[in-house]
Length: 194
Length: 194
DNA sequence: TGACAACTACCATTAGATAGGTAGAATTTG
DNA sequence: CAAATTCTACCTATCTAATGGTAGTTGTCA
Image (cartoon, rainbow over the protein chains, first blue to last red):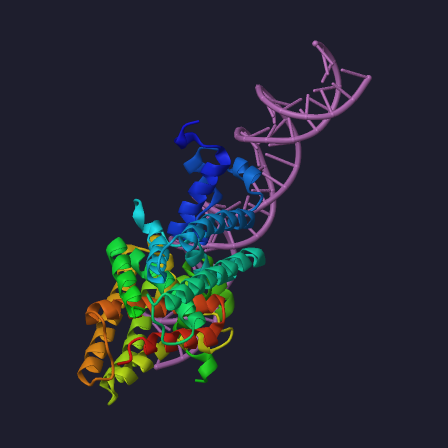
């Protein structure tokens, strides 16, 4: 099975995620999806009974993948500062491939939060919570090994860092792209140098 | 003329701005607008020939108002640190009144950027540019009077601060509200203390 | 009287979603 | 083993509601 002809569900999810990361959930339709994948709109409903169901499935997969990327960093033998840099690097992912205008899936959905079902919204919030917890353990590592310096609590810093990265991606998408994202990331990391 | 019965255009713009700040541009309709204001949908088109026209007018007013608030801070007799704090305080505005779930108009539109007309998108980008310029002058003031300390250039710091504030608002809307926004603001300000 | 600001009544298009059906693969069962 | 059944992954056709938008009309007031 060639990479371009993966199973239909995977292709649907790939295209759907791309559409949401670029246009937002309310500017993408099952019609867009069906045209991009090459099956009929009704067949899309076979895989996603409803649009909400699609969002929930998209979030499951995204959180799973993102979580694995983070775990790889957490388990690695790096200093806290190095871990933080690698973690921040994950937020560059969406800007890496053409057309270089994707946002974070959850960042996009956060903007449109009140139009989501409760279960989808809950998943987005959980993504935020788990990320802030991950950052916190990175910060605590960095304090211990002396590679990072915090002014306040690691919890407050973790929340701020997460919000900053989401904000940086939001702005970079509209202005400066990857260059801007990297600049903001550098500025952020520098603020926590000992 | 009582405050609740301002002229129709103003009420339309108030409601439209509220809807965009809460739901995003692609989840609000002229129907919503017409129902909230109490005139027919066709009459809404009298004031806004098209949805794009509405967005452009909304952006004009928003930038004008925001700019005046910033100018008041810039002109005031405050230290750089005090100006920065007041500036950051502007980003709490959307969370201040019920239902406490508004975002920055331009932050919301940034997420949905590629669904906007070129003129609307340009206006959003200009809002970002002008804000970063304002922050930069605040930072330069703060360096001069010794109330702020930067690691890198004031341009880089200004860009980062702006992205952080937009990000903080995006996240706070979904989690923690005003409390979270204030916490992130405190963390941010603290990072630039001398 | 004429401009303004609203109205009624449409229109074409698209949205998400459903009903019902089919070819073929997989599974169960006499 | 082979017939019967069920499942998978699509399809055509259609529905209802909503979308942005237009044309032409009406009431009001300076």
